[in-house]
Length: 78
Image (cartoon, rainbow, N blue to C red; front, side):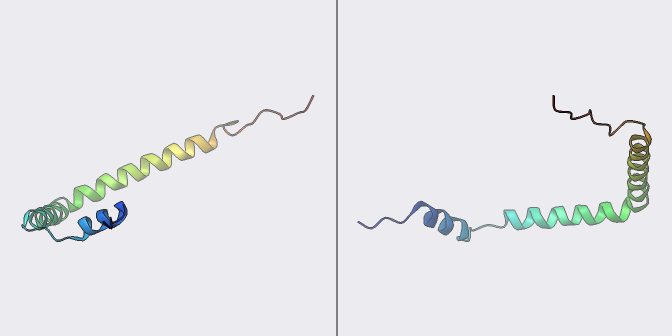
């Protein structure tokens, strides 16, 4: 009896079309929800992203302006 390798069986199973609309309906539903959120929350989302970017920029400036933040000990060989 000629057995197929495991990877062939996995590939065949993964490429087989399944009956049913569940996956398609879930995908369409998530896309609709995402579009509605983009339309309804556009201004709030923009403000939210700007707030995050400003906070990260301020934090980076603080880290970079700290004296000795990137100081490394001397590497002298004894």
